[in-house]
Amino acid sequence: MDKKKILVIDDEQDFGKMVKLNLEDTGQYTVRIEDKGANAISVTKEFKPDLILLDIVMPDVDGGEVVHQMKKEEELKDIPVVFLTAIVTEGEVDSQRGVIAGYPFIAKPVSVKKLISSIEENLTK
Amino acid sequence: MYVNNNPVNVLLIEDDLRVAQLIEDMLLAVKDVKFQPESIGSLGPGLDRLKKGNIAVVLLDLSLPDSKGIDTFLKLYAQFPDVPIVILTGFDDEILAAKAVRQGAQDYLVKNQADIMVIGRAIRYAIERKKGEKELRSARNQLEERVKERTRELSEVNEKLRQEVKEHRKSQTALQAAYSELKEAQTHLIQAAKMQVVGRLASGVAHEVKNPLAVILQGIDYFQDKIDTSNENIDVTLQCMKKALLRADDIVKGLLDFASASRLELVRQNFNLIIRNSLLLLKHQFDKHKIRIIEDIGEDSVYVMADKNKMEQVFINILLNAVKAMSQGGTLKIKTYVDKISGVGLAIGSRKDDIFKPGDYVAVCEIEDTGTGIAEDILDKVFDPFFTTTHGSGGTGLGLSIVKNIVQMHKGKIEIDNKKDGGVKVSVILGVVS
Ligand SMILES: Nc1ncnc2c1ncn2[C@@H]1O[C@H](COP(=O)(O)OP(=O)(O)OP(=O)(O)O)[C@@H](O)[C@H]1O
Ligand SMILES: [Mg+2]
Image (cartoon, rainbow over all chains, first blue to last red; front, side, top):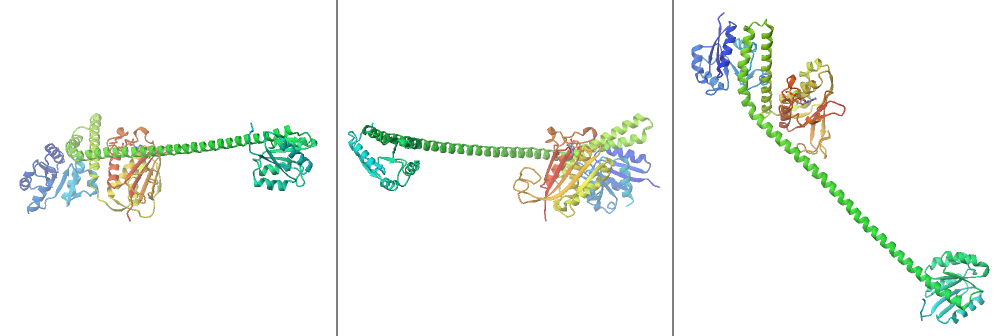
C-alpha cells in the first residue's frame, strides 16, 4: 500500500519537524512541512497531499484564509483538512464533536496516538 | 400669734343647752379675741350650718341625739377636713376624746373644767394648728406635685435619651450594613477586574504556551517509541516529563475555560436536568471514592436561562471539589428547590444584594459534602484564580474562579460556606424564567 502524503502547515517549525518524525516513523506516511500560510496553495498543488494538518493562527495568512482559498480551486477543494490549533481546548473540541465550522479539529498539544487516529479517521471519509 | 380684729365664728354643736349657754358666755367674755358663737343641738343641722361656710372652729360634743361616740367626730371631719374641731367631752369620756384627737381633732376640752382662759386659748390654738396643718399639707402637696413633675420631666428626658440611644444604634447598624455592602462591592470590583485581566491574558498565553507544549509532547512520544524503555529510569523520566506537560496544559485549559465564560449561549434550560446530567457524568468518581449520594432534586421542570455546557461545568467543578474533600468516602447531598426572594435577602440566609429583588423567583441548588471543610482564614480566597490547597494532587486553583465567573455571567449567585457539622455547602442560585 502506498504511503499517505500528509502536509503540515504550521508556523511553529519545530512542531512540524516533530510531527514529521513521528508520522514517518510509523512507515505509513510521507510528510511535508510548510511554515508559511502564504505558501500553502502552491505547496499543496505541488505536493498533492492526501490530507492537510492546518494550523489556524499564523502570522501571515491564517488557516481560515487558507481553507477559503483552497475551496476556490477545483483540484484542491476536496482534500481533507484537519485543523490543528492551540486556541481551543480539548473540552471545546469534544463538546463540538471535533468539528468547528464543518472541519475536524485537534487541540494542541496532541499525542502521537491521537494524531494518528484523527488522521486515519479523516482519510477514510 | 393669733391676732385678728375680725370676729371668730364658733359653731357649738351641743345638745345640752345649759352647757351650750355656759360656753357661749365664756366665749363672749374673752377679751383679746372677738368670738361669735352660735349653738346647734344635733349633728345633722350642724353639718348643714357648716355647709354654708364662714365657721372658724367647731366645738363638738360627741354625744348627740343623732350621733354618738367617735363616729360623730369622724362624720364631721370627713366632710369638713379643713375646719378645726375641738372635742367637748365629759369627765368619763376623756379616752374617747383623746382618740378623736389622734384621728385629727385639734384638741379636747373637759366640759366641767373649762374656763374662759382655757377655752379661749384652746380655740385659738386649734385654729392656729389647723392653719399650720393646712399649710403643711399644701406644702407637702406642692412638694409632691413638684416631685411628680420632676419625675415626669426626668422620665421624659430618660425616654428621650433612650430614643436617642436607639436611634444611634439604628444608624450604627445602618452604617455597618452600608460599610459591609461597600466592602463587598469593592471586593466584587477587584474580583471582576482580576477576572478581566486573567481573561484577556488567557487566550494569548494559551496560544503561546500550547505550541511549545505541543512540540514537547511530540518529542516525548518520539522518545518513548525510540529509546530503550526497558531501562526503567528512562521510562520513568519520560513519564514524568509527560505528566508535567499535561499538567501545564491543564492550567492553560483552565485559563481558556475561564476566558470563554464571556462567550455564553443563554437558552431556556431545565435547571434540574442540568444538575442530573452533571451527576451522571461523575457517577464513576462517586463510586470510586465510596461517596454516597442523597439526591433531592425536584421532578418538575424549573426553567432558567443558561448555557448548558457551561452550567454543567459549574456543577462538575463543585462536585469534583467535594469528591476531592471526601477522598476517603462520605455523603454528598444535592438538593434543588424554587424560592421566592423575601424582603430581607435570600431565604437561604444570605445578605441582601442587588442581583435579586424581593419577589423574584430563584432556582437554588445546594450541594453539601461531609469532607474536610475549608479553613476559615482561606474561605474568602477560594474563588481567587490559582488559589488551591490541592496543588500536590494536580489542582490548578482555577475551578472555583471559573465557576464564579460563569455563574456571574448568568446573573446568578454562588455561595460557599462551612457547615456547622463539618463539610462544605455550596449554593448556586439562578433567576427562574417561565
Ligand atoms: N467542597 C470543598 N471542601 C473543601 N475544600 C474546598 C471545597 N471546595 C473548594 N475547596 C477549597 O477551595 C480551593 C479552591 O478550589 P478550586 O476548585 O478553585 O481549585 P482546586 O479544586 O484546588 O483546583 P482545580 O479546580 O483546578 O482542580 C481548593 O483547593 C480547596 O482548598
Ligand atoms: Mg476544583
